[in-house]
Length: 307
Image (cartoon, rainbow, N blue to C red; front, top):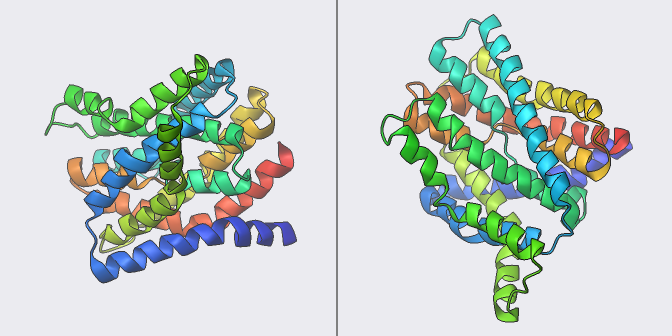
């Protein structure tokens, strides 16, 4: 019990305080959330991803295995969540929203600061986290949009849009510079390091502002079921696969903790653009984020204990 309280007080609570700050300031001043999102996507996140990969001692074979694991995990999650949606008797549109909210977890705005605090800024653990962030972004803006029929912009254009994002190039360049041992000029490295340092405080603040901007009028039981399946079934499934593939240590811990993250705000944003019932996705995001204070603390404790 004391260890759980320690984890909650020293990892979850600091993040929660920044989220709450972003939430309150958004309600008071009505910040432009689109501009905040652009700051994250085009400024601090690419620098953070590049520097995390550039400075890490990367086992490229391991990273490929991590990506394969995430694909298998996504497929397994899809099957399980589809079955749950069918048992709940959801309509086709809500089934897609229910599924997306479970497949797309907040590996970035929430997962990165949790990883940083749990592993005390360990570059190796963060390199695993970065791969999960990139995978989630690619997955959300490809399958996530496809599943809701991106008729407004066309499916191919929607997918290609991801490859225009700086996050993708932060990944590619970070891996390239690391693999070929290319040295970044000192002034550039100093600038990127300052940008990286701003990342955690900014993206957690933005998470709070994004949550404040989600509007809905009611709470449905099936949405609560969606939130609980994201927070509980997601990590249980991850534990089974980690044990099955004999993945251990920091890699297993980082993966398990991240799969326990609440539904990503991206799932609600995509729903607002392409769904007829965007409030349903917003309900799952809100409830999973609020409940995650307890569930994520529990999963951190379990991950550190069994792996």
